[in-house]
Picture 1 (cartoon, rainbow, N blue to C red):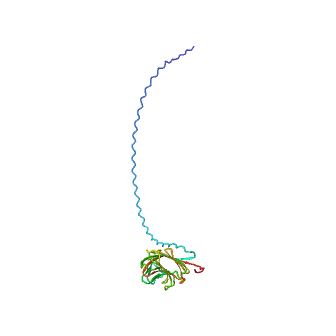
Picture 2: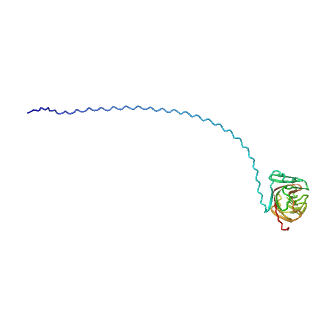
Picture 3: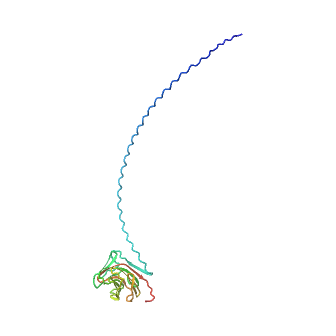
Length: 260
């Protein structure tokens, strides 16, 4: 029989206590970061140089004035030719005859006819109208100065040497219609005449019949056959000055069915 010898271990002794771990050392402070330096100032941009002024443009020459358009003439009767003179100019030129006595001038758009010799007729005639028979005529008149009882007005069917008809007024309030110096209708008073200066005269002449108007109002009708045709004119008697304006003459084309 074998004998086994075994060594017996003694009991394990208790483990010794572990040493206490010392505290972790404090972390050192992080150093303060220095302030960033301020950016340097940007240098100032220099001023742009001033542009010199543009040279002045020379003045444009003035455009000449356009002549004024004359007024439209009134519509005449059917079958008529209209002649008109508004005297919107500075001289008569060749459109009117020069008086044998006195003067005829244009002032401020009016024909001024001035008689300077006692006992004489001062007259002027349009040169573009002649040998007129049948017509309607009207004209504005303005008495300016002189002897108030002298006649002024219209000559018609004139052939010279006092062979004409006359229709005249005076600013003392009378009118006269005559064959030359011989009255057909002698001086007659009427309230139609404006004694302060302005009056419109009108004649309608057809064949041997004549109608007369003062300030657009009929004043008289006459018949006479001494002159069938002739010139148209304006006149003043003796010493006085009268203005005439807006002369209108309608030359009528008349077919006679018999004289009345």
